[in-house]
Length: 281
Image 1 (tube, rainbow, N blue to C red):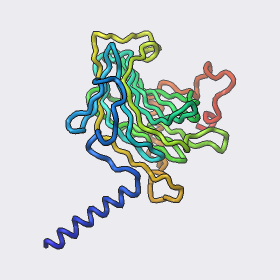
Image 2 (image 1 turned 180 degrees about the horizontal axis):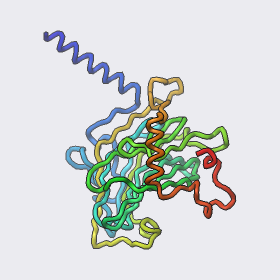
Image 3 (image 1 turned 135 degrees about the vertical axis):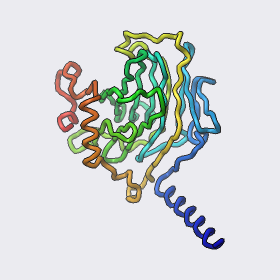
Image 4 (image 1 turned 90 degrees about the vertical axis):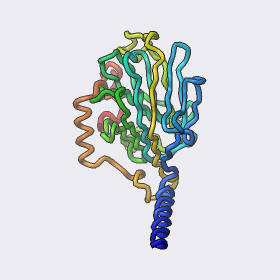
């Protein structure tokens, strides 16, 4: 029996090691190992032995953090609980980005609200420094009452934004028709909480009420399933993962019911014609 127990333990350790070799990084329970607070002085904190990270905004400054590692393809998950109460004027940004004027970027931005009104979830994709691909949604739950999981699946074929494992947006690789796609630049994960009351809530009509400050967003349960940067590595499922028919139907339903803005239908913004990808999607 002791031998069998020891063998089982060794087998489990080997399987864990193999699973971590399939991806570059396995999830940890200590956010101190994953992130650096990069600005805001003491307004950004990692608490409870690394289990919780908080960002705070007051009338002097916001705050932010970034990942210690860079990622190229895979799936990123983070649980976030957004600013409660009257958060009008505030933006909680959560995104992947490379550096420089020709950077790539994959964005979640949560635009604050008056109490009782829904948050606006703003998404965008940049390639070689060019964005202008916004889609916005209202969530089907109150994102301030509890933590919810916000995910980015990114591989050479597609980018999928998901909320609690429900896909809300897909941006496919359409280089075959001349649409640029981010696939060559590694990105870090960033998040920030900042004041953007010139545009964030109802186009800037509702300003930040500093009597409600400080504003705080909380983070936990970060998970990065990142594929090895190796074109011959087919063992990482995230390199080839796409939406199956069930999730395609979920995506369609979410977009029909909860999408409030789509750049591909904004005639005033594109009087000379929509971007090429709009003709496909």
